[in-house]
Length: 165
Image 1 (cartoon, rainbow, N blue to C red):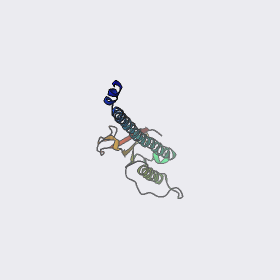
Image 2: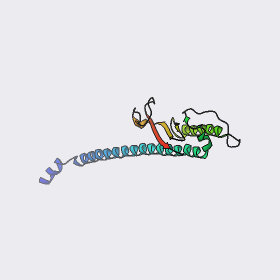
Image 3: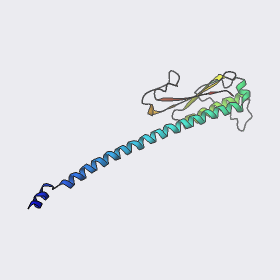
Image 4: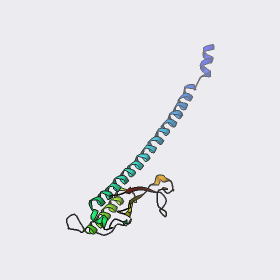
């Protein structure tokens, strides 16, 4: 009689255990999903920074390859706009035309490789150049990167490189 009484009091106990187990496992799965999302976001940010690094190397290499144009001041103030230029791969171009072509090619690549990507170059051959790449990064949460110059929109990330050819 004693054993029947024990069984009656424990009716439904395994169902409660299953519900608690499902609750604990679901919280664990939610935590893992948050980790995956965070990893993807960090990977995206790292990708854009890697692209920005390569793009600053690209314009620096273009300037080194055209030292005559750099000496003439053709790279001293490259703006964020994409200029119209001659096609200098198959046509003969002067050093100044090559600088305009480099500027156009570089900022076209920036706009393709980075979301809202634009680049500027300022400085001169004697003092060195400051290469600035800017792109939109929604992970900034409405802020502006402190490295960015004044007047840039929110959610803008900037990558700055000082360069002396």
